Length: 356
Image (cartoon, helix red, strand yellow):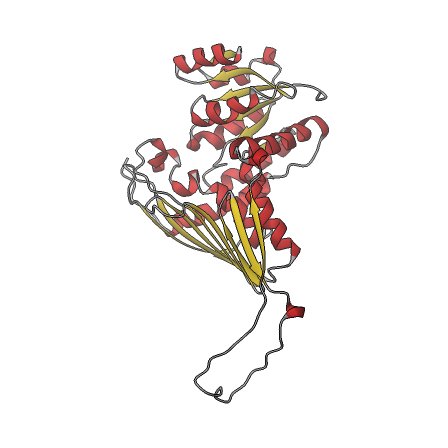
């Protein structure tokens, strides 16, 4: 049994607020209790009251200022363009906040939120749960083992084929593929190039299939001296290999998906010595290097096959410890600031026309 049950308020009862956060939290009764939700749609409020036995508010300000609720933290699952201003309001109301991604639109948005967190003493967290993905943790384990050697490049594709037509296609809602889907793989790959630097950014964006004016095609390259090159795609116009990882090392490489990974490598001490030769090779021959490659394989465990719940459990366990025991957040606002600065630079390089 946990030390105490945290009282939670949730802003928004759309896909994130209800299907991600509430659906997880309602089954974690030893640590969390949903005591209030807010949504400007009345039927969603009524549904939440029935499903969670909580209070509801059509105005989130009424919820965060209702002292009788004794909220321990508020999940901010509002529209994307409201994440930063509402998170600020929550902290100024004296409450801890867990913001959905994207954390904000600009790096200055995040710097302001970090400042408010320090001034008010309220905890500021961001729901970047993909940091806890089982495949990502395994890739890091393989890289850190050293068997692949010095990592030169990591290629990641979070792609698919779709013709989206909701508010997540509108620039005025701070939407688009990189702000919406992008925070997941971008948070992961920044762990490879380093969370301590601002990398060089090259990006190309386009509107391809969606009905709005925000990008649904994004190709992003990140580089920094002495660090691996990052090649990231978030595109809605390919039918093949929607979620893939490819790691290029000096001794070998890794490739795979969210459920299966393969890696091959040679061990330098086992490799035959080769020397540079300027003379033509004898006969109609080519370079021959008789390397013995070792292989590794990984399949997601049965316990982690429900990816959403697997990541949510680890993330929320860390958040619980941060609130109740003062533990350090695994995903800090300063780390997500780096991510938003990169996304902001991508949009600076690709000023798409605003149509709505």
